[in-house]
Image (cartoon, rainbow, N blue to C red; front, side):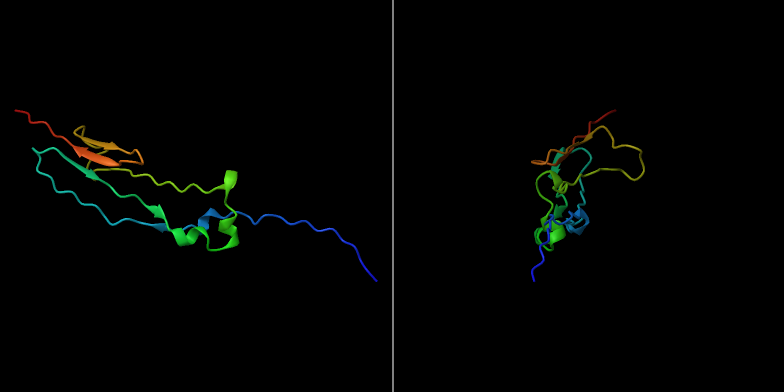
Length: 105
């Protein structure tokens, strides 16, 4: 005897929390106050192996793709904002921190 039945195959549920991030090492800058200096900062990146680890992360494609961008936030521990001689270009292709203090009397 045969029994007919209908089944539906669904895509696995996307779980972006399965991504692991590789955190860059701490950057410490020591600059003479009268010298202009620039430094490129490293950003956290998604660990490549974690992108394919299980079906729940492999299903995160197209419109369901996980956000894999990171942001650098610069703070000076004793101030509410950075001094105006410190600028930061957060463009993903450069990420350049510039220090250009001015000399005042």
